[in-house]
Length: 175
Image (cartoon, rainbow, N blue to C red; front, side, top):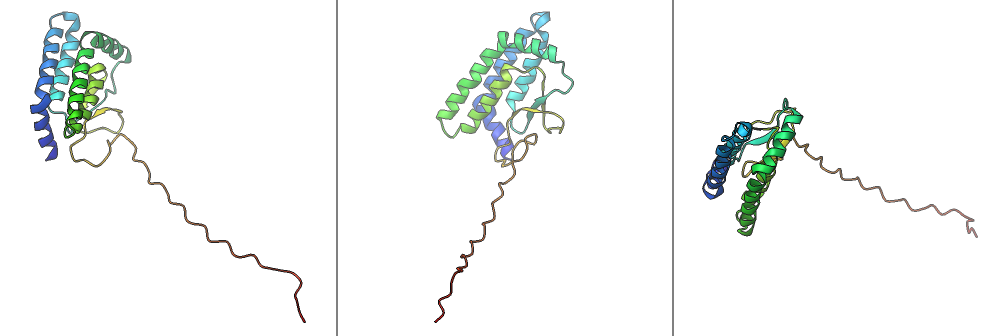
């Protein structure tokens, strides 16, 4: 329930505005044939930015490293830096309001994704064999992301028994 409320608030406060920026970037990417993959990725990210809570971005298991690097470099030069800048500016505004700190944190996580989106995919359930890139947790969730190991509670040492008093041995003082 909190996830739906969080997503509705997100949509009203910043999701719709950021999605419009992603969609404009997508339309610009579709103008040239060579930048069509940028446009498609921008539309995917625009959909994620509209409703991020409860979904996670993970590495794409079958993604080509070479094409991901090339796509990320071109993306970063063309649209990635300004999308990330808008996310950071929104994060600062949300941090100033104090009550918007969860949205500020989410914007900073999305800024990282706005810089390097290729080689990633959005999922609702995190498979065990992939690495989490960006996780905008459900609001009110008290657990860590599933791909992160849960830290073990530190073992409290058992106190050592107090040392026994030394036995006094020596000449006896018999009368």
